[in-house]
Image 1: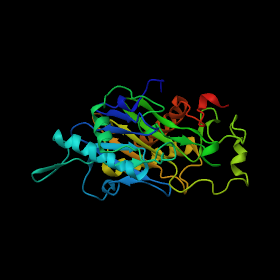
Image 2: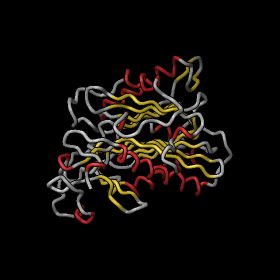
Image 3: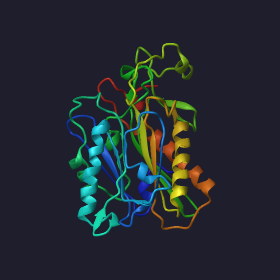
Image 4: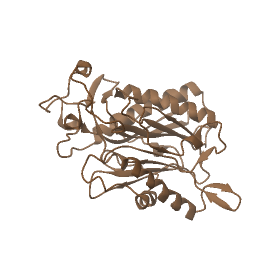
Length: 322
């Protein structure tokens, strides 16, 4: 994976961000091709905030989605999807039901209300604006879109946390492309599996260094965070031909990459959710290879998210702390 790889390397995928100018929050929309993309989802952790994930279960009738929303603003941010639905309906894109076209727009949110004025959050207008900004070019990373208010390393509370963000990556093997975009707002620390180094996470009490890996198991770790105060959410896209069942399994594999880079992951405080979009224009692929690729790009996107992040007041970024 080169440093410019992105989920938009999958043909037909477009990404748009909306970022608030008032406080650290925003949303990110991943648009499928007009014909939609075969979809899957896997929700883990114990504090999810989602929309239409049940629709994507393999036994349910709708096979294709038209867009996925990743948003800040906690449950309020689910309103972003309404703006995306309006944008798609105006263009005649969606699931045909009789005389109606109903856009299929699942969504997942993360909690960023602790930064600034919590009454300011992404809404339907923000979702519409993100669609208008959508492009097949590599999307911006770091403090933009759903990553604008993201934080990581909250094991000992927000006062010792660091800035999270949003990142993207892709991998191509024999014509099969798998890409990911992930907004990283984890309770846990972010580890680069290639080096074994913690790149962002909980800081020491002095705040000028990362805690040693073993300190995660300290007796000091107590009830310092509230349920729902964190979450890592993302989308994996591929040009491989998938059934809905295979897309669901690929979403499960994507969580393997999440668990390699976020330590700990899938906690009682997280609502970790991964979507899959199969925008098929290529041949089928060995499912094991495809799962390995999905896991790899999710890990890379998570690491890139925190490396691209920039500090906020009292929230240093990875480039500020060693």
